Structure formats: structure tokens, C-alpha cells
Amino acid sequence: MRLTDANVVIRPRTSWEAMDLGVLMAREHRAVLMGSWALVSLPVFSLLTVLLWSYPSLVMFLFWWLKPAFDRLPLYILSQALFGEPPSLKQAVRHWPQLLKGQLFASLTWRRLSMSRSFTLPVSQLEGLDGDARQRRLGVLLQRNAGAARWLTTIGVHLEIGLWFGGMALFYLFIPQQVELDWDWQRLVLASGSDVLWLEHLSNAFYALILVFWEPIYVACGFSLYLNRRTVLEAWDLELVFRRLRQRLSNVAPLLLLVVGLALLHISPSTMADETTTHKPLSTQAASQSIQALLEKPPFKNPETVTRYRFGEEKAPVKNKAKGDGKLPGWLQALLDNLNSDTFTYVAKTLEILLWSLVIGGLALVFWRYREWLRTFVSRLG
View (cartoon, rainbow, N blue to C red):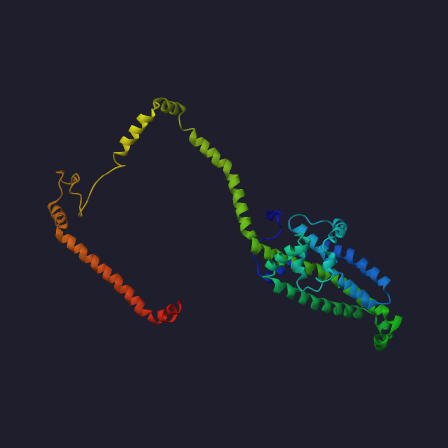
């Protein structure tokens, strides 16, 4: 996958914001998601109903248990749509049998009742990890967002039940009044055998239709939680920034090379040729002598010993441009002479002692100010 081809903004999000992104992704591709789920799950439901007509409760249980097998198709569609064009309805349905090859038995047995299966499904299906590698990967991923994935499953269960009862209530509202008068609900509820089988299968059909709408949203929310966790762990947002920066620099590089080439044209080829001809080759001994002579001269060697403060009395006098006589004013010369005396040395020593006294006094004041804190915490270091 290429992060630059992502159809959503890659950035760290909160858990609930990530699930909201999953709802938006499911809404964006609702046609192919709901259509593929219906084409795959409803024939299986119909087959179970025909084979187990006398056991509607078993039909309901088996169809509910097979949900992880159907969940792989919406995850495949969303993963393809995230970094490219989503597959068509025909391509998605044709690809579904290939998605059932990896770890299907584990998904339908000990992993079936996992509360975070929508969050961990991409690890098995998209990353292809199994065994110890999968456990290590989940140990890292589940450090965060695991609670949100469990809440997603809990809310999804209650939402399925609510929509299920709501669908049956809506069906009852559409029953004509003449037909409703002939129904004896107490007799239907208390009836047993074949008289009530059609009502149980009808309620199962409502549940199957509800999953066509809700289950792709559930898978999309878990997938978005997985993407958000990987964005935080692998810093996908920073990687995108650096890739965009590199792309911008690569676009500017030819212009920089052109500018450098135009700047080099100002150097005359004849001048370069003259410089190459004027420099004569030197022998090793002559080169060593020339280097040694240069090192003995300023600025490489300036031997000088200073034992007192000096204000340039040994240098060439500064010319007074105002008067033009080349001498300093009398008052300035007298001040410099006084500063060069031993009195200035004593004054400097005295100032140095005062400054050190201020530093030591300040440290003592700090220790005295925080003596209680030092007695409480520093004494425990031992």
C-alpha cells in the first residue's frame, strides 16, 4: 500500500472519532458493501432455512455463528477502497471464496466470541499473521483502542436487537386491519409445531435483513480503529509529511541545477586556464619549506606574553582625525596611564572578591529558603 494514495486524511484520532470515520467510510461505499453482503449472506440463510425448516432456532444460531466468515468481504472492500478504487460488486463476490482460506476455523471456534474481533480481524486477513507473530502483534495493538473495540461490539449487539424488534413492529404496522382482526396473537404465541414455524422464520428473516445494513458498518468501525492504531504506532502522518516534502524538493531540484549552471557560466574559461598555467609544480622539499615559512608568520604564529592589563600602549598610536596630530587627548592618555597602574589591579581583585561573595551568599540563601524541602526529599536518597 502507498500512504499517499489514501482516500482519507491520515492522522491520529481518538477512538470515537476513528469509529465515526468508519461510519463515513461505510456510507461512502454503502452500495457495494450492502449489495455484496446481501448476495453472500442471504443465499446461505435461505439454504439453512430450507434444510432446517423444522428448527428455526438452529437456523438463527448457525447464521449468527457464521458472521465472521461474512465479515471478511466488507473488510476486503474497505481495504481496497482506502488505497485505490473499490472493487465492483461482481469482483467482490467472486473474491469472497479466496478470503475464506486463511484461519477460518479459528475465526469460527475459539475466536468467535472475542469482543474485539472487528479490531483484530485485519491482523489475520490483511497482515496474514498467525500463531506467535499474531499474538505479539495483538499485544501491541490492544494496548490502546481495545476498550473502544469492546464497546463497539456491545453497542452493536444492542443495536441489532433493537433494530430486530423494530423491524417486526414495523411489519405489524403494515398489516391490513381486516387481516389483523382475524389473528389471535395469544393463540399464535402459545401455539406449537408447524403452526408457528412460519412466524419464527419470518423473525429470522428480519434479523438477516438487519445485518445487511449494520454488519458492514460494524466491520468498517473496527477497521478504522485498526488504522488509527497503526497511524499512532508507525507515525503514518509524519511519513506522509516527509514524502510530500521530498516530492516538493524533487520538483525544485531541476530549477536549482539550472541556477547553479548559470552561475558557473560567469567564470571565464580563459581565467581558469591562466590560473592553471601560472601555478608551477613544486618539489616535496620546496613545498615543505614553503609551508613551514607560512606557519612561522602571522596569523599562524603570534608569540606574545602578557603579565598585566594593557590598553594598547605598545601598538601604534591611534590618529586623531579631528585634530590631525596623531596623538590621543590628554585626559584619555592620563586615564589609560592610571588604569595601567597597580591601583587598578587591587580594584579588580576587590571586585572579584565581591562577586564571589554574592554568588556564595545567593547559594546559601537558596539552601536556607528550601531547607524543609531538602530535608524531606534529599535525605531519602540514601
